[in-house]
Amino acid sequence: MNEAPDSYDLIIVGAGPAGITASIYAARKRMNFAVITTDVGGQVVLSSEIENYTGFQYITGEELGRKFHEHLRKHKFDLKMEEVQKLDKKNDLFEVTTSVATYIGKAVIVATGRKPRELKVPGETEFKNKGVTYCATCDGPLFEDLDVCVVGGGNSALEAVLQLTRIAKSVYLLHRRSELRADKVFIDKAKGSDKVKFLFNTKVKEIVGDNLVTGIRVQRNDSEMLLPVRGVFVEIGAVPNSDIVGFVEKNRADEIVVNCKCETNVPGLFASGDVTNVPEKQIVVAAGEGCKAALSAFRYLSQR
Image 1 (cartoon, one colour):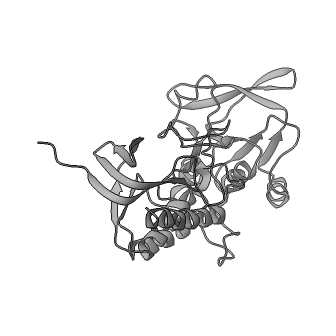
Image 2 (cartoon, helix red, strand yellow):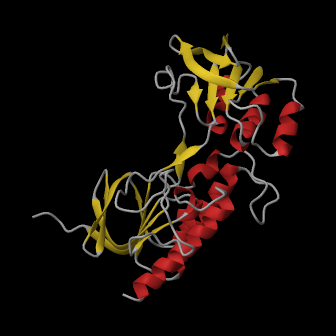
Image 3 (cartoon, helix red, strand yellow):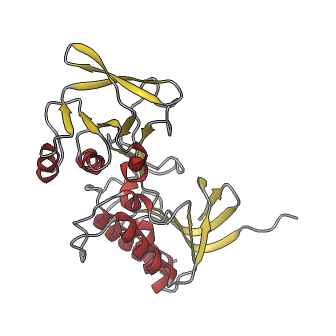
């Protein structure tokens, strides 16, 4: 006979700023809950410098992620380090299926965040982790004294450029538009480095190499050129990790649609953080949304 699945009042999927904050509030409410995630900290740990999180004039992403983890460990709950594959609803209960088991919850908070957007050009898949990367904080040190490029025009792209100026020999910034979207403070810092070369109106056509990346083929205005770089850092935004649930309302960007209480169109299903349609994908915003989601879930369960 198969054993009955573990059951909880609440299941929180994800442990980035939104999931961690939701967990802390659920623990303080003495809720019977579990957190299911493949990592603790989310994309916070990929940020090199954080200067806009309340209470810290400056802190690294790794340090803030560690503080989140320390806070989380002070509370008792079930932490499942597993990958969620699917979320279903059966009658009034939710089934969360992972690579290991299935769990039952009366309510669920989806706080799965986002993942890097890909270029979708020839050579990208072939050279992933062989010169193509999506995290300057993680992989930047591997490209010491080498020529590299960053693709993108927002804050994450400029932050990657600034990190790489301390490591690489030279850094191309490739942007498909004529103007950057990043904050002026980042742009000014990048322009102040003689290692950085800006290439506007530039589209990536192909990433080339042998066993490792040796160059990137781009189209700039009406001409094509091959830039001899050893590293390609893709920083063109992110897409929500919302594919685990198919029965909830999403917008055109595949973000889960929530109201101001983090409620979805499915009773008992809540969502918070970067996976939702809430504007401004910021750490402090995600943390606040996680708080709201936990309190809304508590209220929902209390009224059942």
